[in-house]
Length: 350
Image 1 (cartoon, rainbow, N blue to C red):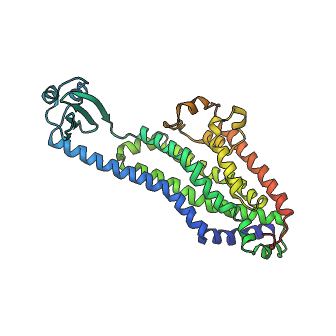
Image 2: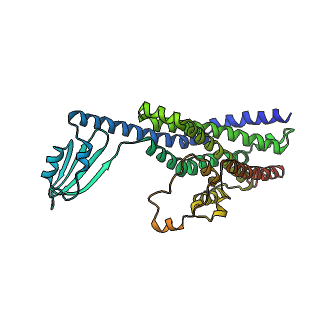
Image 3: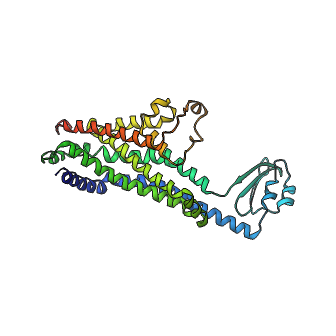
């Protein structure tokens, strides 16, 4: 009987979630990083094609390009590596020229001021190792903390609060169903919906990022543990929906306006890298990052003063992280069950 009631609630709530306006915003949040990685792949494909065309016209040896140093004259550079594959010149108080060369894989840029090399830079070919770090950084600092976070805010806080605003919750409460059962059904509906949306997005992100990778390199990566990394990222995404979903379902029961608790949780999760080791464990993001297969370094553009405030804590092992996340979720859902049992409808007050 209870299972049938839960199943009925899940069917109804999932239909409303997938077809509602907040469902559309959830799709957009999930789609944003896919577009970012797809743009990166298209950009890299264009770069590879350009380098191949330059190298086909005239290939320059890598050793010769690396022999160019600051202080060399324009004439010496042209003698060593020949005419550039591309160049730009700007005249003003000083004659500034930028020469670009390629060895077929990397792009070397030499900046000349008054025909003397003042800067040497190398744009190396994109690698799977670099892409893995890019994905880990975007996944942990953008996708989990913002996209999945706000997706769960939109879906789970409205499971009860949205019904109260629309004055339709009483239809559920008139049925012979325990309120704890209703809460579980709504939570599972939101969990299934967000897990399907965001886990699908995670897989599409990985596919988009790997679009430009050489098939041989990709096969080697997958055979060497790549499938395990992909499974781990999908699993972490699902775990994020589990943890954040329980928090915001409870917030929807506890607060009339869920914006303030969502802002508090966002600030707490965002400040996790600055918190003492003990307090780090009282957050969802700590356990999620512990489960990630690649550790993302702090963002490079963090001000130096804030870098001194960053505290380190040993990541939890996989069993401990799963146990900690499960414990937090169970405790929050227990509170949600108690709140649901005491729920009283007063549409005039809302």
